[in-house]
Length: 525
Image (cartoon, rainbow, N blue to C red; front, side, top):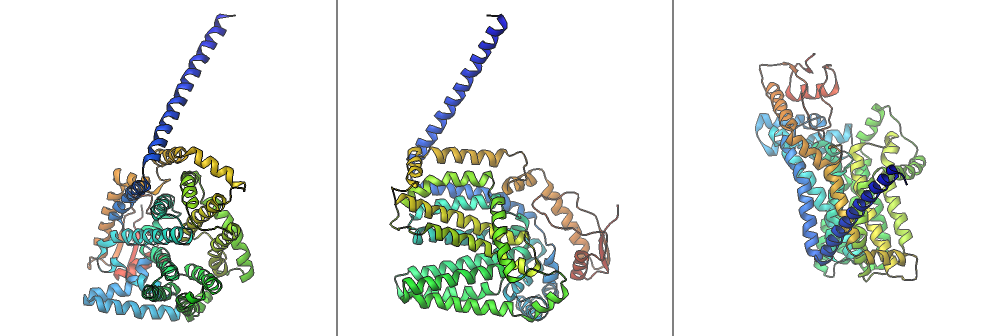
């Protein structure tokens, strides 16, 4: 045997020893984490998940300190801003918002609740108050999603409340890290109010309807019914994607109640009726027809829109299921198995539940296909993405219940595997989730890391200082011909269009009219 061969074998032996040592250390670490997770009660795990979620959204809220007014906020808020500057009266400003809302209903769009709220942009009253927008939008959407998801897991699927809370907190953590368009769902008042806020109202309404179904007290049943009826009218006056979603789900609940428990039919029918009336008022608005005549874009026929919706639902489901989402899903599989196995529900129709969830997701693509012949509007995709994640976790829990209650099925092998792994699978996937989240190469991949990066490197502070310099010029009555410098820095999450050098650009015109200037444009280099 040659000397080179002996040296090569020696190197291989050392590499093998190092590899085996590293594998052993990793197995030991996973074992200790697994054993630790097994000893941690679910209540404490839910508390840890809550801490993780709060820490993850904290950079988003801190970045909101440097948020500013932008895009359609100017057009929808101009009349209210003028009233506020002239009178200083909140009541008269609200009246102006309602009058403008009625004008829009006749001449532009029928979303009478959204338009009213969009006119009342907080920055109309205090320009520096844009920081409240992410607080409102994250607060409303996260709370409504948590309440609805936890209610479904506990009431409809029979899962433990604490375990359901843990699942929903991890779902929210997942959603806000890979949100389709963070700017339009968190920081932009106009866009997030129209979609995120109104979807939140619908989630609260649906929870109230479901609570009336499960309530054993007549007084509580009536209270939930009244609350759901009021919220349903608001949902009907919001965006058409949420409105159509509400109509479909409420129609199904009415049918379900008529078959299963007719005594509860009235508490479901009343919100369905009020919501349908509100939705009809919305779609029958004269402004919708006038706007369609002005807009040259045309959509597909009703049948084609429905068929294409199923295709686009599949495309976007794949898009919204990256490795990060898969890891969180795998992490929760043992938890969902344990929760579903302890449930007293029968889980008899997993296929129908899966098909129904997919149809619901697909239906949310139909309005934009029918109206403008396209999908991919980011502010719309934000709410569809959340509905997809809700459906994914609820359907997974249902299948876990189906398999855990039928030992003779093929799913018994899956259940046996999940039980053998104990907390190891959850521990490993959780470590991978944190590793990918923190150490990803592109620091703008996940919203919290991107926000933290913008705060640390100072681009958020620089952007805000320059935005306030612009505002000082806008509010200077001695300056009527306005030229401003381009932003030298802007956080990645603030992905909105800026002014241009063309004073006739629509955004330039919006700012010009809002501040009553002769023209507004970017200064040429």
